[in-house]
Amino acid sequence: MGNLKIGIPQALLYYEYFPLWKGFLEGLDAEVIITGPTTKEILDLGIRSAISEICFPVKIFYGHVMSLKDQVDYLFIPPMVCVEKEAYFCPKFLGLPDMIKSSLSSIPPLIEPTIDINKKIGYQY
Image (cartoon, rainbow, N blue to C red; front, side):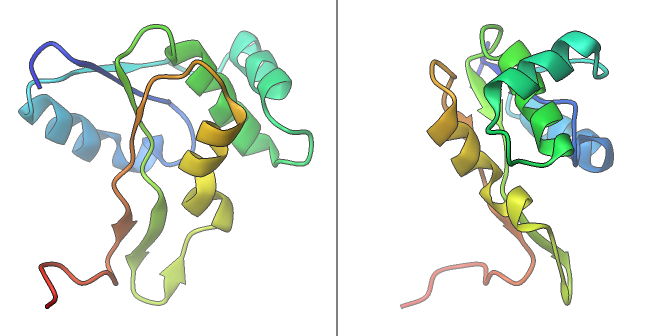
């Protein structure tokens, strides 16, 4: 991947999974760019960019995406489904990459591996 800049919005599940994501991406020789803490400017970007019916934390996420979009080659936004048995994330986390792609224009491509421990690994014939 050398010299690629991959942005990770500093919101929502960032606080739990950033060390893992950063280590993985840097192991692929990518430069990881984050937005920094939420500011009033980021919040305002999110409010202007997201649909009005979306929850406040997702609006903040939108603001982080908007503040990163011109600084990176890709955005890392994995759909989070399940990380422990019988516990699923909010549907907005599952659909976050699709919401971002369908409602924001001029954003870089997304890296969006689905995180789901229930998903079978390997090939099925």
